[in-house]
Image (cartoon, rainbow, N blue to C red):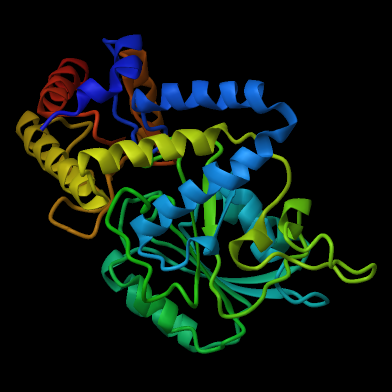
Length: 389
């Protein structure tokens, strides 16, 4: 099945380009161009009153779309922001003051979290326990054991690890292993949202879930979100004035109040165009009956085709034996990661040939999406043979 007709603007902008970094910057479908224009025209038409449109129609529509995809009963549990780092800061600002915060996490979290927490460690503001994500076969057991010991202020882990593609198969079990009701639990779902079917029913009342539109949701920058569990009313110290919507009239002189649900995690003024694009993408997918499960199956089929063809090429520089998560492992996201000391050199060599991948340290990543089909895999392997044989 090919969906190329829906991505003509990005594909026709550089027909020779082989973009296999859909896990990093996903191409946008053509529907987003109309959405971008609509955002501009709404600003021109409404001027100062555009925020009535944004919070009256655009945000509620995005909440409904995302809540449906994650099987959340209450769309108001979702708040949107320009990036996930802002939400990480608000989560950290929930933790108790006056002592180093105790954090349980992994050694494979994305930079938004890892860099920030390491900075806290530098000044003895955090005591961090990191569970190695590899070997993946024993990861869940090891994190459950560590969580079960209790005594943490925050437990933070990924649904799909950005540096391997391994998809944690039992997120609910990991969340449920945290024994202390006062511990904040958060799941980084950025590489899971719209990449594989995700049902938050079992953890919606206990865990935060953070993701966004830049990758698999195909909506570009500025459309990130957080799901806030309804187990209690949260008061992040890192707060923006949007978080007081609905409470401005009742706010006292000495006490900062917060809007209920996800709105309590809002920041301040932002560019709403990303939400216009997000609504356009999710509405387009819904109109075609395309689900995350279908996207996941499409990509996994392309992955298997790629690895089968790559195995036949017998390239010394790039071969299936280098996969961090083998193709036989069903618990993987929508990209493949090769471990090689030549990752940087290979990435640059491929980029010079207009083949777009990316790398993290000694790991070279290939990601496929809806805008890829079998012809792209065949063309990719032909080019790899020309370059690397």
